[in-house]
Image (cartoon, rainbow, N blue to C red):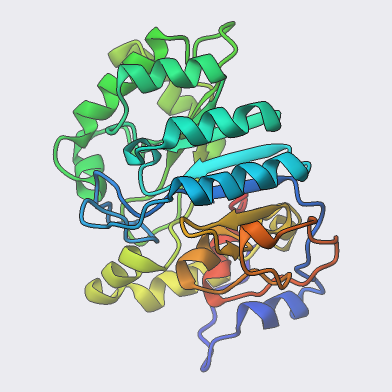
Length: 316
């Protein structure tokens, strides 16, 4: 059961909470390489922990992509997870995809939907890429508040396009998952109930289908942290995250089985440490230097925002 909300001065750190529950945060077997292709995005979402947007110029070069492809060739990653920003805006995305697709059983692209076009949809289908799409809510108002005006309509059209090439359609063998994040300083609804509701409403209103829905808490970093501070919600939100700490979620945290590589090749334990600039705890700075996967038991750095990954069912 979650802890009761008890204000502490100073508040208990995430590391102290792990100790109190008798839990350690160390690496398990590393199976996923997450590749952040840059901060360039067509949207400026309020909850973005990377502060990605149209004005950001950081984009992965072909040289760094070659380092990523070389790492995928020499190391046994089961999954390559490509994110951004908006990967679709990276000029050499197809080069990266064609390079890693033969090297890992599962290749994932995280899409904001609005940067997608038919050419890319068919490329994803050809390479059997798994798509994970941002789709926060079932109404235009909430979506606009989080992601911007007009995003709802474009997202529905993109989902229809993906369904038309087989994504999310039973029997077609290409997976389409949706991700819902709250639009404010509150925690997500229970995942199973939300998935049932999203599936029924999208089918009834738009004839859209998908495979899975994931509901994640927003992480107090980047643009979301700035909004929490400006709106006076930071302390209360942090208390909710800490009070919801679930020690059972620690075993499945993504940092235990994943490495994150940034657009410039720098290595991190997860996408949130990447955003905060906390380097990979295994001691290797850049993907081109990575000769072996980190050993199970390697310690992982922690920070206060790690509570966002251990609240409720966790953030895996």
